Image (tube, rainbow, N blue to C red):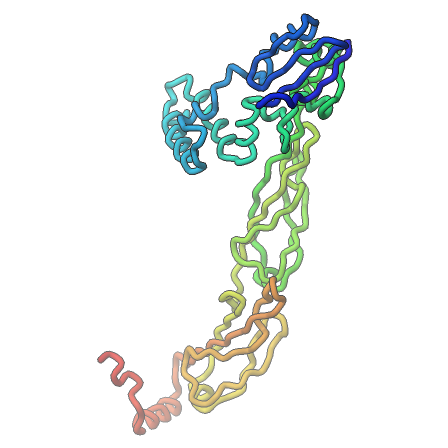
Length: 364
């Protein structure tokens, strides 16, 4: 027997009409059906308890103890309170705690999501199988839109498990027993890259476990990446189910220390030792850079220990602008551990000369 579905428009609430020749059954979203003529389809709809199918489920608003006009914040507070009360770890001796906690979590998952809540308010517990749009959802979505046709054998097979394997659910559009495609879970990993690779960018090899196999992946490290940032490798996570796509691999980046350089944002700092005479009289000294080798730096006369001299454009590349920061050379005046007699005599002469006390007034 062949039927067609039409969406009714002559009522304050939407309903659907199942037509068979000259007879029809009205399917109303207020969860009851009226047989206008006694046809074979009428018992089918009544057995199905009309739309929706999951009438035994508690109302999600009732589960969380909130009103239908509750705000998102009120929903969240109610969930947290109930989750703390019924968490299986809190009540391990209560055999129903896990079921209650699962019910609370499901309710919160729906009511905390604006789109899911909108569909739930319209279609109830069958909202996952119902379409949505400006004119409401069609419970026969799997068989097409308004005016679509379907075969009664498909309806019977989908709802009662028969139909020789071709039975589909009139409420979800899929075949009974066919798993829904789900994306695989995301997988997290951590790697430590060399200091130079983090500053200049480059490739880094990563070993990951893919099922029973150990696979090596290449991670492209962008120049200027910071400590603790993550890189997403699409499709390299857990395997999907039911034909769903694989999840992603989230790689957290740690940066190894450098023997000379350290970072301050997009600037580099390096400590360079100088002698007392170089600091007092001035000098030209060799200074290392990260990507240009050794350069010559002029130390002005009278430079104190700890002074910072700037080398412009020799720092870390900014990944957003492409510009480099600066390198700062921190001067450290270094004395030999042992002085010759001649050196001691010269330092004594310097001590005898009139000079300014660098600590004068410092502790006043």
